[in-house]
Amino acid sequence: MKIVVDQQLCTGSGRCVKACPVEAISLQDGKAVIDHEKCDLDGICIPACPNDAISLED
Image 1 (cartoon, rainbow, N blue to C red):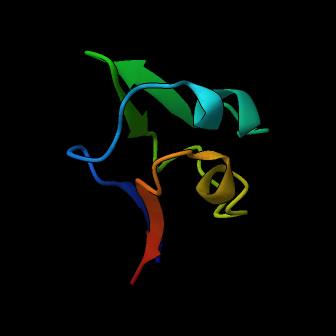
Image 2 (image 1 turned 90 degrees about the vertical axis):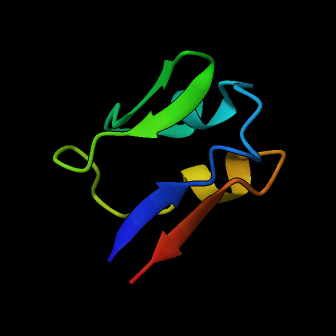
Image 3 (image 1 turned 180 degrees about the vertical axis):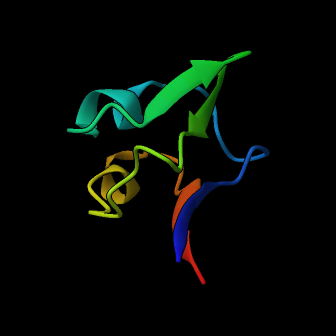
């Protein structure tokens, strides 16, 4: 499983970046990008996104 960002829905609000306790999300070119090496799959970023651009995928 991994957390993914739909780049078409992401508006770069940065709310997911602030919500992530392990600093696994950064903004690159105005879009959220997940560092899967750091991500602990806690999913706190999912509801933090105002555009539903983040989801858990198999």
